[in-house]
Length: 440
Image 1 (spheres, rainbow, N blue to C red):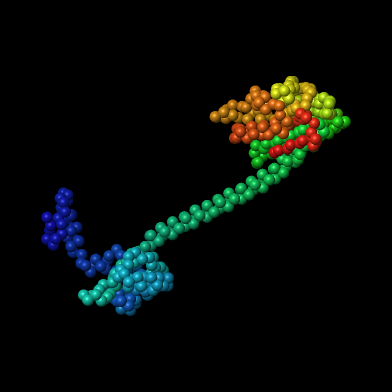
Image 2: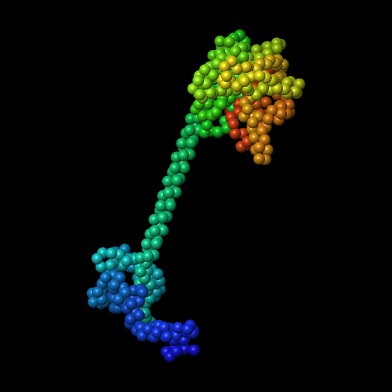
């Protein structure tokens, strides 16, 4: 059911007097008033752009007087320089071709020099014979939209700038880390021999695994000649990591070398090191210590017996792989950590290497590697003994190669540096001389 004039009758709400008043006010709005006070700008132009009609809303937005605009200005006169250029190159040509445009972003000039961002729609009105008569244009204030877009753009630029800064910081950090790793690698190599010397009548092999490229480790080893035909060798592990560990490693290595040249007895060399470390570090309340196994080997030549005498301060026992396929630990019981107390007890042992026998020294990074699904178990000496038995007999380079593969199999369960040193008597006399193998 409709009221007079075709306006639909609203549903009953219980407030009929106010509803009737609203409809009455709506019916009293004239078309002219609706045009002049519309929430958007309206204007009509001739085909050449001369403004023929413009509503009050747009005049107020731009701060213009109707008399100064109608018949005196063209639509393009209301636009900024950039708006005029876009109108001439895009807006007008497309309007002529299509007859209408919708939602074109332009900027209009306000009186006094300000700018008003707007969205413009236009349609060409044609006569009865199809001739274009005029252009009707609606203008919507896009200030809020422009502000929103500018805020989005600003935030995007800030995000891109932050991302660029983060990328630059990441690249710089990676470069710094690479330089640090290179420097640490050079320093780490300076703490152990670049290669092992050739020992007449013996084969040797060594491997050093670095757990972290970002930290200096504390494992060390050496092999060098002493009085007569004897050769001294040692392998150990200082407490801690980093520069302090590197300093202690360097001191330990050169102290043992000097002590061995003065008195090549293994126990005497370790006693000298123990006295030095205890005197230097215990007094300042920051004790530093190490585990170490020191040996002297006297090759027996082609027909002699190769004798090895060992001394140990708290270090894992040496492992001997025999030519008959057995593997056995060479215990050095009673040895205490080097540097902890004055006059620390030092364990000693002696063995004979027959042709085909190999003795292996290792640091606890091997036996303390974490295994199992949850990395909760330690590899341990029993597993190492079984592994050695499976690989006996073996020449030093064969044993070190096998142990290197074992270390790699631990993956992230190997979180400590590990040093391996093997010496062995060739199973048969070598026509090419002793063999030395060095891996890292």
